[in-house]
Image (cartoon, rainbow, N blue to C red; front, top):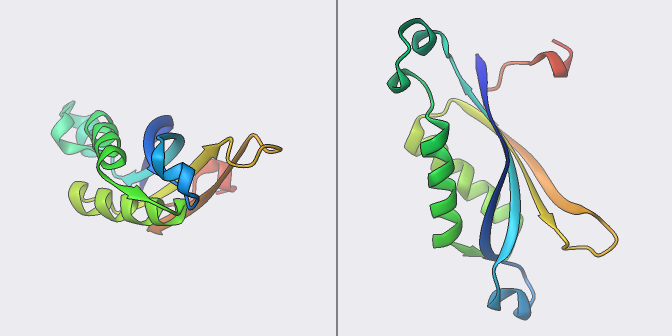
Length: 125
């Protein structure tokens, strides 16, 4: 299984548990690893045979605009479920960062993996 990467995708959304956070949009930064077999697309040079990272990125932007959550955990879980269902993604990893949420930290966030991702070289495979 190969991995398509989308790194440092920024989205603006309403997110947070504090009342003041519910009145503004905040920026999130997302890194995604999407499991797929790229060989059919590579052999035919056909976008329809792979995951279209532009379409996925646009869907993430739309998701962020349409949904308002208190927790980044909820945002992450629901986004991953939406993408896997709509794009038929076998497995994916999402790293989500919320810059400025803790003044002393550059970022806070989380990393989740759902479905099956093959080991990569960076994992020591």
